[in-house]
Length: 284
Image (cartoon, rainbow, N blue to C red; front, side, top):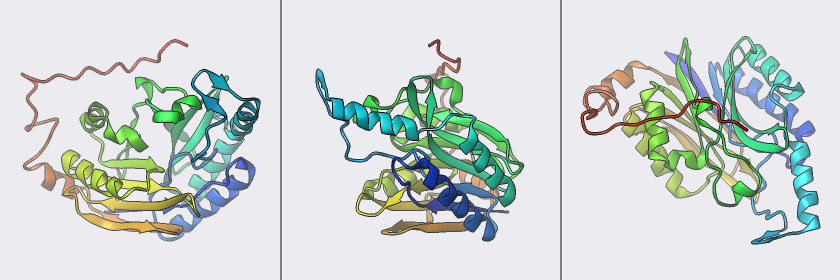
């Protein structure tokens, strides 16, 4: 048995300096409830600029939009860097695994990234979103297969899939094939349909799904939830405020679920279907 938590909170856009202490406090709040794994939303450090267009039209960019992007770029973080050091310290103080979405700055490009911190404060891994959605492509680069990360931990195999990556069947299958047990869906998608998606993934992959959505008043309404390997909602969804969802998990339930559906095992047909995944770091 292990205790896991999903934290629903939001960023202070363009103010990473103020956001980091707030996030550290939320990690402590979840740890106070005994959480051994703490999952936090997409783009929590660095922010999600919902509704902004950065002055862009097809074939046109404005000076004002470039200035807005500069502010966003300056709000992003280096990995590693002082912000990751603060998050690692918070994970160590919590004695918990922490999975958190950040906007990562690498050279002149930004990435929507999820970071994994171990209970000793080590930055244990990261995953860069492989396909930014719609206008996100204006501000974020594409990750590659080298960060399709699943980490083996004493409480289970932890992986993260970011927002609309969850609608990519081959990416989901890759995570199932890597043996993900604690499937962390970090998002800003607050639509009713998101709950259906999370329940489907839990049932399809026979994994525990922990979905953390941002809550930003008047902009992103939340909707975080925790789903069992049989697709049953254990906690949430919660809308309209900050929240910490906590539940105790039994990984044995995964084996019970895979009794009749293991999509990468006895319910696969490798004689018919094959998946190839390029996991090399792409040249830049």
